[in-house]
Length: 263
Image 1 (tube, one colour):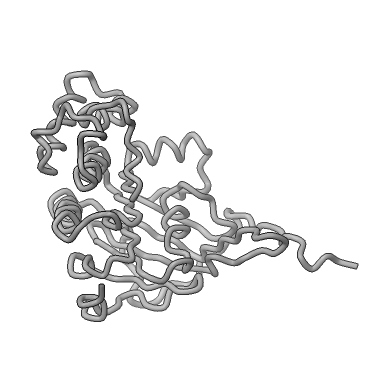
Image 2: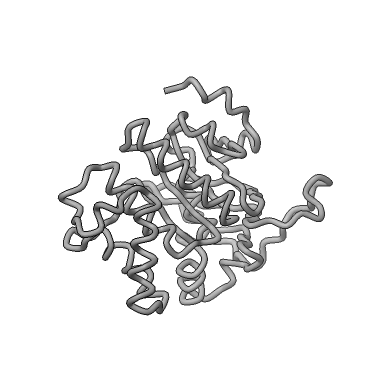
């Protein structure tokens, strides 16, 4: 007897054929073009489908929010299109490069060179000062010591932390820690910015600072921003809101007014 709970054979990423373009999509250039993204996880003895064949198209310089209930697949989608987690099926083309056809070292290099990541947990090193936190990433990019220091100080001043350059995390508030994390992500001037619940631990004022900075990067540097959030306050900062529920995109251009007054 065939075990009905046996994991299905993984569809090879390279074999996934993208669906036909819609007329309004033809001829456009995308910063991120994800097609047919599927991802399942094992929960006990069963496989749970978290992403069910999602298509996601984002233009260069666009700020896109992905909103939906907990467990809808938002963070999994962000991980799949940013090169952090390989989907079971589908294709992801970012900055004209097919991410999941690359080797793991090339994916790591792509992320280092082109992507900035902002997470709700800050992910700061307890023993490092604000300036050192930012310089860590720049060191991997082979910048000189002088250039690293100048870039770190500039990024921290941009987020209003010029007076905190020598402070360690235990001497900073939650809002300041998040701004250090943002400075670290933005110091290398990434072409793609991925933010997962960047304002969940912040008050309204600091949340506005975070989104104003991301919007500045998009509009002045041409960065493309994909932000996963529950925070309805952020709706007014977005160019577009995508809603997702139960692993399926329910809207690719939701009305910000739906979220503007929700808390």
